Length: 472
Image 1 (tube, rainbow, N blue to C red):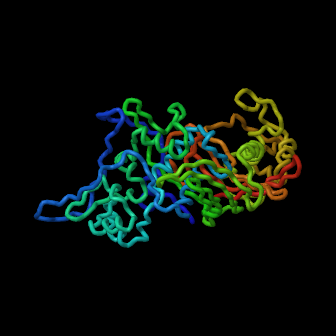
Image 2: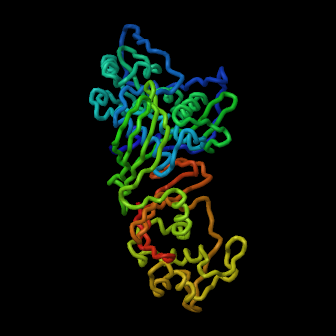
Image 3: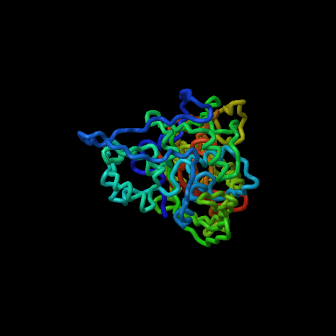
């Protein structure tokens, strides 16, 4: 099954993810409970001369619950996806040893905010026909809602924030994707969610068995000590892997299964990595809890674990001048000559003296030295390198710039080696920034990540040559 986490209705709003803009929270009557903001009330008008009838609904819950009726493959896929979105494919998890509250809070933004099994109303004409696109609501007759409840597709408790007037429920578009326990605290003017801290803490404790350390919260999360609330912007993103479930084994409250994740064909990558991950969960009274997650043998090549990917990034990815990842090149001759010279300068391949800021004491460097250094890892001619603007034919030298830096860095998202060919999924990590997410970006505990493409090299002992880069 292929997942895209946000619907058409959510795209404009939820992709405004997690920019860390500050707001001041209004005081509430209790330090333990925050009153939910009012939800949009726009809808289709219903004229009547009689007083409107109001349907009674149960009080909203103060705890996020999954209330899983059937633990089928669809639900297991969602449980696996929520984990993979945050922890990736190669992290080992054991509930008895886990204490990373920073990552756990990030998990909440997927697992805790979104419904475990959202209703695809676009495939349900009994719902979609009542969509008012201009108002951003669904105006559903009471009999339609009652039918959804009787079929088990909705729970009346989920409608606690809505009342039927003149036989019509006016329901917000976010209702179908976002958990109702969370949606009631959503502010449609600021696109922020301000939740009682206990609600979030209890959910994280129930799923991951860990606590929330306030000192380790991501910088884009605002904790209000007085009102005991967490405030953050609504979160969205894409999951580019197709999942399948197998080897399901149930033993009392324990459930074990294997999830295979394969890169979607919609993503233009040089390789199609496929991962097998084993999950063990506890399932009691409709609620699940992760007990153990581990990576099994991969089906197509050696998948590099996180520590190895870090080494690979430092050795092969970080040395490249960043704009090299802005375009595809199938041969070294397609890399801009300036970018090759700047790569040489950034890494001081020629081992010249620099000052404390990395600026060359004597920037003009004999062409033969620069060209020899570059050709150690790039199969390119000296004549091509001389087309660079940094080359001076007058004295046959290259001017090497220094002092590179910035609030971003290259990272290795994935790495696979088959024979002497190494393929690396490359991304750019923007650190210490507070802004809205742009298209293709996703938030991680280390910053905003923008996947860029696949870098390919040929490795021979301690020697290596860059071969190509396929941009996304």
